[in-house]
Length: 359
Image (cartoon, rainbow, N blue to C red; front, side, top):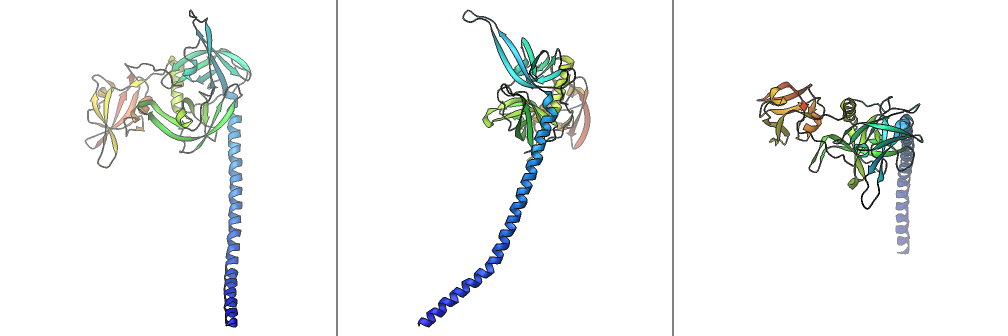
């Protein structure tokens, strides 16, 4: 009995030893492979980190010389209880021309008694050229320019960034020098709640702190993608006006002191097809309006305006934003299963009233 027990113990020990011999090589190979993967991953992360650091550094070096701090003074009339006071609004701006034109938020510059542009420790007096309160953009011009400064070019057409792309802002927070901030491109919005925007806005995770409103936003290659125009405190982010729309507003302000809003004279409705597709149809044409004169009819399905696809009612403001007053704009409609290419001449919106700029 004793010898039988010893033989069983010996058999069990031999079994476990054989299992261990079989497992050890596999475990060794697994650990070795894991180590190699970790090594490759770490090296990859280091390479990515170095490339991204270089991208941020490149953006700062390329555009830091174009960023300014804008200070706008507002005189408050005296009352029986208080003497006259000077209120100061501060924001970030950036040069867009060699003539000293600077873009800044209208919520900073509109109605100011005096405007000063601080650049590299020196303050230069400036004058207002024009304001667009709907997009919260003002164009100002320095009365005397620095000897040397950079400009940020405005591209009329810029491909939209992929969702989740990194973006970099350059701003003048508080009393600090030009400072970069890193964020993420989080979406494109055409409305917020019941408010429909005048054109599509870019949404980013970049917060707007004191003095940062109006800062430019760049992609990792240093291309301007937009300018901050409003904060979104609920998500600690902000909205930016895309660069193509910004270029349009800047040209309008330079030419006439305000951004002219187009009008094509029609009412629309949005339907959902049996397949779940959203479509926009003409429900009413304004008598003697541009749409009627351009050949549109009630019941036409609007496919695109100015090459902007139309699927929702909220797509219309973005498309009409691209029209120019008294110039023909292409519009594609579907009428009884036929696609028609028409042209309409947008006119100044007869009911256009400037709104208060967003903060």
